[in-house]
Length: 104
Length: 273
Image 1 (tube, chains in turn orange, red):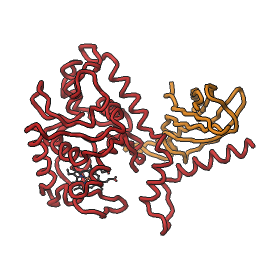
Image 2 (tube, protein in one colour):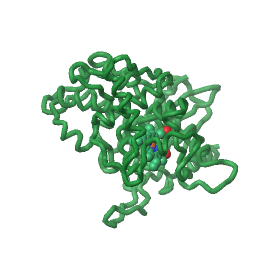
Image 3 (cartoon, chains in turn cyan, purple):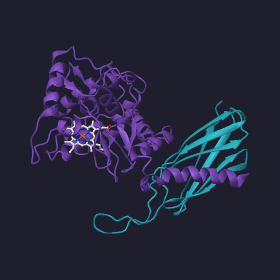
Image 4 (tube, chains in turn blue, red):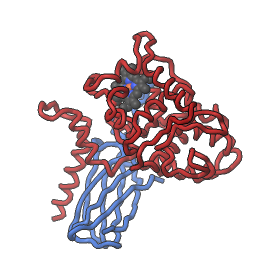
C-alpha cells in the first residue's frame, strides 16, 4: 500500500491554492545496484486533482521527476470547509488517493 | 482553462525537477539556485514524512517490554517533546551523562522498551533501502522545537566540560591529511567544489544557520539525515575513523555546536542539496 500524500489547500480571494507532497521512489529505470543489476523503472505517471467531482488539475509525470515529488497548483473557486482530492497512478498500476479540507 | 492549469502545474514541476541539472550560468550561482529551490519547496519538505513516521514510532508500543516512548524524559520531564531539542544536550541525572537527543533516545529505547544498545546502534542511520527508527524518532522530536529559540545551558559543570571537549575535538588535527573540523569550518566564505563551508567556530550566524537546519532532508540522497549522521559524514571527509554512534565524543561536538547556535530560532528539519 503506497504511503499517504500531504495535501494543503487554502482559499484566498476566490482562488484555491493546493500544495501536494507525494511519497514515491520515482526510479528512473536507469540506475543500477552496486552489483550491476538494473533497478526497474517505477514512477508516477499521472496525477489528478478533483474538486466537487470536477477535475481541476491533471498532470503527466515521467522519469525526470524527483523522488517524493512536490506539486503546487491553483484553481478558481473553492471555499473553506470544502474538500479537494488528489490521486496518482504509477507505471506498476499502484495508486493512491488522499483528501484535504480547504482552509481559509 | 484546464490546459492552462495543467501547464502551470507542469512548469512548477519542471522547475523542481531541473534542480539536479542546473545549466551553467554566470549571473546566478548554484547557492542562489539551491536557495531558490529551498524556498520553493519550504512548505513541502519531504522530511515531514520522516516526522510522521517518527511520531508513530514514539506512540507505538514496541520492544521486548511492549511500551511506547511516551514516558521518555528528554530533559523537560517524562513525555515532554515540545521544545526539548532546543535545550539539548543536557546533563541527565539517571545516566550521569551529558546526552544529545540521539543518545537520549538510545537510553529510552533501552531502559523503557528493552531493546539492547547494540541492536539500535547497529542501524543508527537511514539508508535508501531501509529507514532507521532512531533517526525517524529524532526527526519527529526535532520538529517539535521549530520556531523555539536555542537555549542550551552550560551552567552544569558536566555540560561545560562537554562543551570544552567538543571545542578541542573541533580543533584537533590528525589523520592522513592532518585535518581538523576547523580546517574546513573555521573560515568564512570558503567552499569545497560547489559546497559552501560554514564557519562553525568564528561566525555566529553561520554556526546558528548550520545547527538549526539539521536534521535535514538531503535531496541528493532522497533521505532525511540526523545530526549524528552529519557528524559521522564529516569525520569521514576528514579521513578519521568512524565514531561510535552517540559516543561521548560525538555528544561533546554536538554540545559545542549547539551552544554556538544559542539564541537562534530552531528551524529544522531542514532541506539540503
